[in-house]
Image (cartoon, rainbow, N blue to C red; front, top):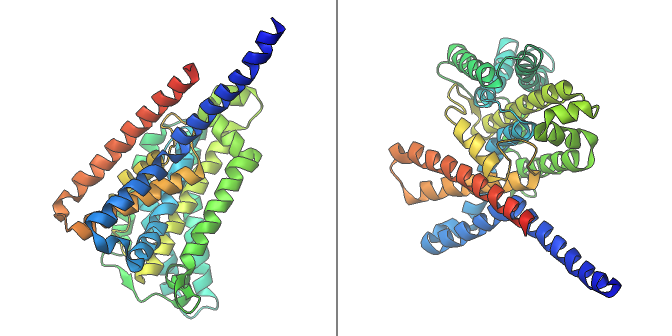
Length: 340
């Protein structure tokens, strides 16, 4: 009997490790497999796709959009979502620029305006958090109302947009280093990914965040301050959306009232494609980065293929549907591996 147990133990251990490896691949790396497959297909069918210039454009263009996608991903991991991020993406840099225009000769006004971009994003997130968590109003209703209010505010403040922004304001979105070849925004994205990944994996806040998303009641009974976690995530999401709008305004050297309009579908799709569960408690920063890459690659292929612009919304809807189907399929596969 002892010999039989000794023989079975290594097999069980190997089986368990294989199950964990398969589950990890299905959860975190499916999107990267799709990125590789779609990229190779695009290079074959559209030769210009694989050029150095085009690949650089894909990376640069994904950065502004990637910030609110990360904000939405954090919300979904915690068990809720924020519909107002697309409007925060626009209103935060608009307020920053208007402050600069209001007192252009005031010492340090540009840096005050930049600070106000971040403060605006955080403030909007705190309002959403207070109404949703403290007053216990449904986050869908709160953030939907906030989205409409902020979008109307954008149209009221700058119906036609503001152009030719100060150099310091466009620094993050347009400045390049290494003989004007490497955009500083790429380095900034790397820093953001490293910090968020470190926070989610290494810090108690990240573990508490996922615990709240997985089972809020159990997390509360375990001593986790669930309300504080959720309000903090709302604030972080607002800040990331504001940061994305700030980078976008730097890239285009302008702020427009239509910035981010209609992109809420893409924010959800990027997070879900990256392996974030709609039920909360599951997700990874590296996986979401893959989702952002996949969205931008798809957008680039659409542009290079010269698809009728009226079909763009159809494509975006299909992307979201595919993301939801992938999430359902991935969850079922992971559950299947647990039964093996």
